[in-house]
Image 1 (cartoon, rainbow, N blue to C red):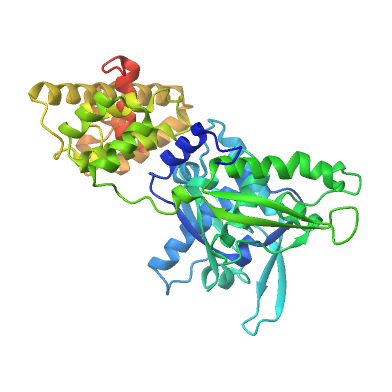
Image 2 (cartoon, rainbow, N blue to C red; image 1 turned 90 degrees about the horizontal axis):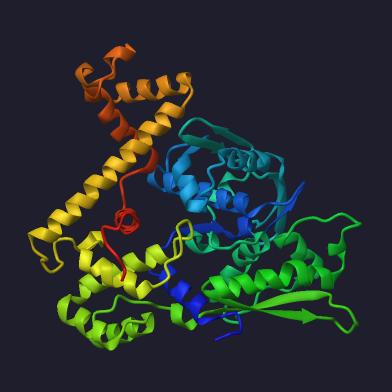
Length: 438
C-alpha cells in the first residue's frame, strides 16, 4: 500500500469497481493531443469523451450511415460526466468554449510516417430542452471512428477526479498499463506540461519546473494513486545537467483490481464481509440466511451507493448492506431473496407509493414555477405523447382538474428524473425513517 492508499481510499475503490464499467475505446491519436488557444477543463474533457462514446456506439449500430450531426440526451451527458450542479448555464458555456479550443492531433499514416493535423475540438454544438447536438471535423472523423489503435478508458473512474491535470494525466498514462515495460514515453517536461495542463504564457510561474511539479504534477499523481485503478511513479531525467529535462512515468495496475470475479464461495464472502466491518455474528447470520447470489447483488447495490459522490456519504457501509439485504432492495434478485412475509411486501409497496407521491409533488412544484410559455410547452409535449384526446390536458385552465393533471405530474417526474432506482428508494426510506441503519 502506497502512502496515498489509505484503508478508506481502498474501500472507496473497491466499491467503485463493483459498478458497471463505462468503457470508451478512444483512439490513441485523440488521447495524445495537445490543446492550443486555451485550457481544457475536466468538464470539457469528460464531455468530449462522453459524446465520442455515444457517437461511436451510434456508428457501430449503423456502420453504413453517414452521420454529420450526433445528439445525446442532456441528462445522459450529465450523468456520464458526473455533472450534478443545478446551474445548466455553466455546462452550456463549457461546451460552447470547446469551439474555441484548437487541437493538434498526433496520428500516423499507414506507412508509419508521422503526420499531424490541427482543428477545433468541437466544430458544432447546439442545445434544445432535452438534447445536445454536436459534430466533428470531416477530416478527422476517419481517425475517430476507424482507428485500429485505441486505449480502453473507463469513464466511471475518470469522472471521480477533482483536478483537471489528474483527469488528463490519467487518460494519457492509462494505455501504458499493458505495455511490457510499464513505462510511458519519455518527453520533455514542458511537453508533459502542455499535454496535461495546456499552454502557458512567457511570464507564467509554471515555466519553472519545480513550481509546475508542486502545483500541478504532484497533486495530479496523488489523486490518480488515491482514486484510480493505477499506481503511477514519476521518473525525472536530468540528462547530465543540474536541472530536470525529461519526464517519464511507471504505470502499474493495482493488484486488487486486476480481476474481481463474482464470489460464489462462502469462505470468500466471509472475508469480504469481515473486511467491510461486519461482526462475526452478523457474518454468520447473513451467510446462513441468504444465497451467495443474493449477497453478491446486494453487495454491488451497496458499493454503487457508497461511491455515489452526488449523495451524502454513507458512514457505515456494513450497516447499509445489512438493511439492504433485510429490505431486499437489490433489483436483480427480488424474486430470489428469502421470503419475508406479506408484511415486508406491504412495507416495500408503501415506500414505493410514498416515493412516487413525493416525486409527483416535486414535479407539480417545478411546473408551477416555470414561466407560462415554458409550462405550456411542457403540456403540449405531454399531450402530443398521448394516444387519445381523452387523456390530454385541456387548453382551458378551469378544466385542468386532478383527473388530467396528476398523470401529467407523473409523466413529468419520470421525464425529469427517470425511473426510481433501488438506491433512490432505499435513500428515501432512510430519510423518511421508514427504515433505519441502527
